[in-house]
Length: 333
Ligand SMILES: [Zn+2]
Image (tube, rainbow, N blue to C red; front, side, top):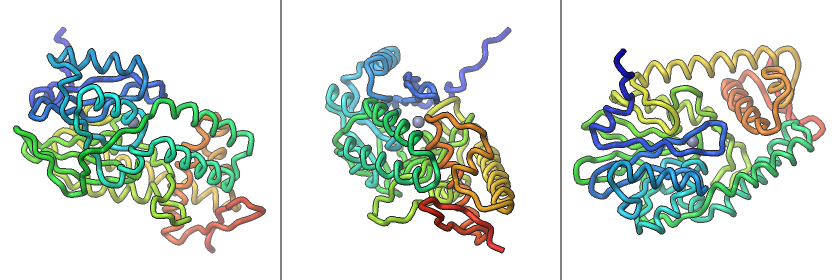
């Protein structure tokens, strides 16, 4: 029997090599990409742990380079499975660190920003009916996980619409918020190739996590609504190959995006049905959908529910009312 073809081979032919770096998270390994060009470029770096660093270093070596030779690190978004080692790689190699403008404060002030995010998440969970003991358990897990992140200095600030010129290729830079507020994708028009990281993943829908608004406003950022708008723009791109942050490359991004649209539509309709029954908190809705939820998944499932109630709020089909300090969603008659 012929061996399975390597799904990353077409990218490798174009000088973009995947290195799968381990993470302590449920998502499994993270895809880091080494672009053999001038400057020698790394896209993301993996989480901040000794094991991840060793594997990254070996992965770079296996491709015939040394970590110290890396001249530029490009960051796709603020999540710690991608960001954690950026600072260390830059320190060892002297590489430039390139990231989109909106990500800069988060990357440079990682601890303070991550802590503020935890405070925001705590308030949000309490407001939406998650029991206080679950909330404090989850906040401790989250601050423990913070050790896998680390700050870095951004030496090259990118903007939506910029072009990153390497010797043999140009990468167009596009801001695609939703999965996180800082998601950035890199388009190689000539090779019809998109480095998309977690903006579009093959096996799981990219949980748009509710995150703290950066503009000082108190309203909840509508992460899923924003994410679906971002996907709409990516759907229009003419590409043959999408390189994700986890799992294998995507060769038909339009059908995958259409599947995601259908999934979110079905879920919003299911929630509309539950809310039509009686007013419910987001926690109540999450339990109706998934039963008893593991502590570690409480924030993910809350984000998932709020993403969909945001769609219904925007459509004028539900409203959010406060009842004894907890927000409830009720149907608009
Ligand atoms: Zn990720």
